[in-house]
Image (cartoon, rainbow, N blue to C red):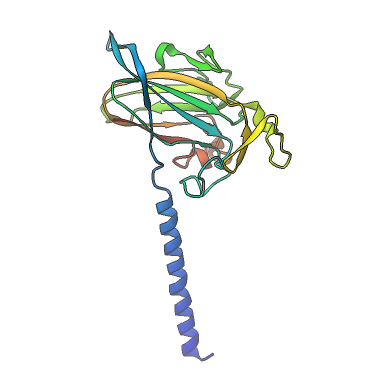
Length: 247
Ligand SMILES: [Cu+2]
């Protein structure tokens, strides 16, 4: 190879390499757009106290799930595809309607252990300060046996504050769902994942006022490595966090 050809070959490989990296970067960036909105559905009306007055408002519901990995759904086409082994909530783009009573159900398929801050074992900011776990009313859950939390907060400057935090208990059956040793009595496939058939079901309600965008995340250290187990899924938007848009 002559010197000129060698230089030319180097240049070509640099340009082609750069182009490959640019295309890969573009694909990854566009793959992480917002998930399709999960919009709460009206189920009736309810009477709640708004600014000290009993008021009849619309009542609406939505259901999300929490999983031990991100294999449950359309992973490759979705924004959780980059890390299929990370814990994840099923949805990160929740939409509800203004001036409504909102009931959220979390189907919990993931295990858990000890909260690093027992405060998040408390139910805070819901109607009556309660939640239901498999039909049983609770005001708190053992900080030793939590899998995730659903913790919703206002964005400073958004004009309205909200704070709702609910512990999502650990589902111990997840330990029996090793795809290498299938256990069809307790576990079943969902998407490319393999999870307990029976979720721990957590239900709670809260009132939302005017329009705005709020953020929620998990406060159980489920992020695997680093930053006190608050790395990976806990520090990357969309796995253990999302928005709740009041429209
Ligand atoms: Cu979590």
